[in-house]
Image (cartoon, rainbow, N blue to C red; front, side, top):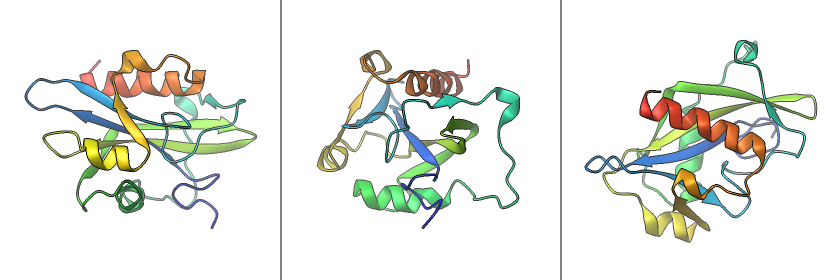
Amino acid sequence: MSGAPGTSGGARLIFAHTQSISGRLRFVRFTHGMLGFEPFAADAHVCAEDDTPSPAVVTLPSIYLADAEKRLGLPSGSLKIEPEFRLCVETGGTRVEVHLARFTTTDPPFEAITAAGARFIAITETRGCPQVELDLLRKAYEVILGG
């Protein structure tokens, strides 16, 4: 199913949680990297800011949330799309949208994320991630903190 959530050519998600009381920001890191639910190829790079694709058929980013909640073992409504974040990554001649999914819960759902084979980390723990992921995380960080 081309373009389906979590498949090659489909959109990718960055998952973030901001603690409402302390303001602590955490991202979800999977065993393969920072993007749900599969990594990009080594040649991937963020498209120029004025080069975000405008496809003939637009898939609303919220369509990916139900799949993500199911994969992560979360109740419906646990995630929301950050409307200020929509980027494009080019890889192998294909352009893929990347969206920022934010947790709606007061506390991070540690158990669900661990059960899904991932963990919450601070942005300072992204050492070793591919450059494209670091570029995407920097932009997500800026959007979240209003930079």
